Length: 139
Image 1 (cartoon, rainbow, N blue to C red):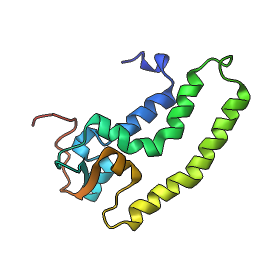
Image 2 (cartoon, rainbow, N blue to C red; image 1 turned 180 degrees about the horizontal axis):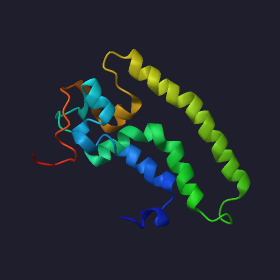
Image 3 (cartoon, one colour; image 1 turned 30 degrees about the vertical axis):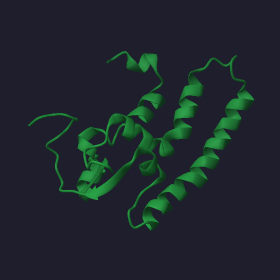
């Protein structure tokens, strides 16, 4: 995929990878794996689907995703003042919603973020395991 950066901005690619992070490693990102944690589907205990990973992380990445998509639009479609207003709203979001999301996860006994509720996922204690690098990979 060497031409991918030519088709899409690097920020959009990184945002989409961040949104997908819980899908890879069977719900154990590198940090979660080192901490002995795993993201699972609340109903079945299986690793989250790609859709659930995106839903879970949309609360963290929504402003970045919006700005990445807006950045791809030609300047004639979106005046500079609208772009500046969106940047201000992104800052307000980052300074209010993200700390509230963190506080919610920290203060609740079940550690559920709003993203977990949207995606119907939860965090469980798990053994550290770096055997499974990609979903569905058989060892």
